[in-house]
Image 1 (cartoon, helix red, strand yellow):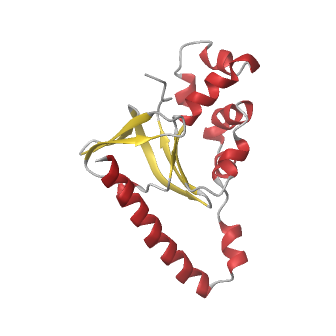
Image 2 (tube, rainbow, N blue to C red):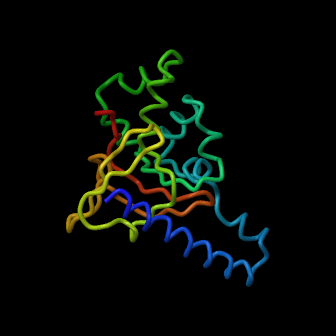
Length: 172
């Protein structure tokens, strides 16, 4: 199933790339590159992600998420971070806990651009940048990633896609 999911994502990337090339024929390429912000800048421009952006900065992951990618990010909102047990976020943001913070944030990032339409019905395990897998489940009730509900899907960026989730994915 994991291989099938990766194949679907790779096919979508190939088809999406062809569509982008056709689009570039009709518009100046430099114009297209300025239309979309990267993952970090997109998140930074949305107040609902201010805690996530602060955590990414504290973890030293800004450059990684500004890289070419593409990446799929399951982005917890400020409310998702607020729902963590009291003191958890403050502890994670301490300099001596940067490794733990990085590991948690990397659980939210998958290599490749996975659009909501590419997610197969049922449960699929996807490998995160942390090297662990999370389950992505699509059902009649919606989509979950790592147990968190996807509350908004398909925010496209220049280097991937963001899916907004309602809780922070934690290591098992």
